[in-house]
Length: 147
Image 1: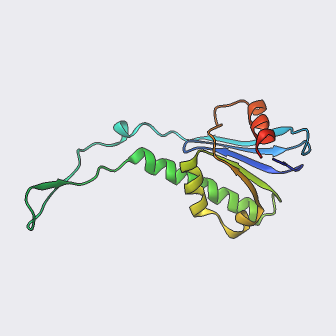
Image 2 (image 1 turned 90 degrees about the horizontal axis):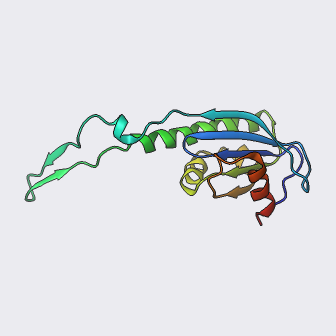
Image 3 (image 1 turned 60 degrees about the vertical axis):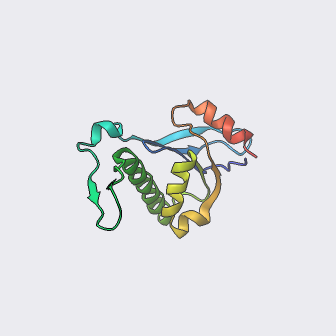
């Protein structure tokens, strides 16, 4: 994948985000960290306090349990929406011309729901991988190898 000089690369998942800038050129990447954030998001079992509620149906036989809320997933989705909001602010401030997003499929889907028009227009690539725990050199190699 061609990563132009000064391109913004966002590596994210539901808990971590890295804003990187290519200080090199399209052939020799030199990604520099501009911003890093890790969200504290304990497992769902530590966030929920009650068992699912019950519903009594006057029409049909038996009872029905409500689906339990996945607080962990809700927090990951909110974190993706926050990331999209930061991208919007930076795009509106003309902070980048080219944007590449690297995130797992679920996070990419959540980000796409919240892309602003200016972000979408500057988006030059998406890679559906989880790379938030990898060193910068590995991220650079994935970007170079991407078709």
